[in-house]
Length: 164
Image 1: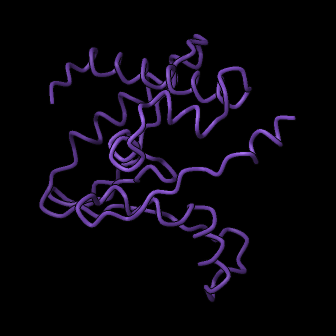
Image 2: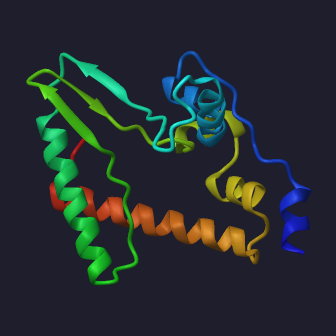
């Protein structure tokens, strides 16, 4: 029954918007991109082959971001040990020099901005469209994940006094 409910609606497809660089990630799911590139790579046959996505930053000091990453990892570990049902996804940061580094982006994610801009739906309507009605396991799981993540990041912003 759940499978038929999932197949009954097509997932929302987002279009690339040149004015919004975050939309570029919506063109192709990360797993498909990694599979396609691996098949064409001369090194794709190696068992440890892996495709990494990074944002290269030049002219920016990423040491503060690295410190924030370390704090987020600590909070994540504490919440895990204490079984606090909150989660966050700290992205990795590699500081290369005083003014350059690399940042791991979040792949296969759609921003609230993209949802509102391209689907013209409220968040609830988007969740209903993507995950089925209120009683489906998929909807309840997506809702729980969103609430636990949102609460986690709200707590992080409060603790770190993030203002902008």
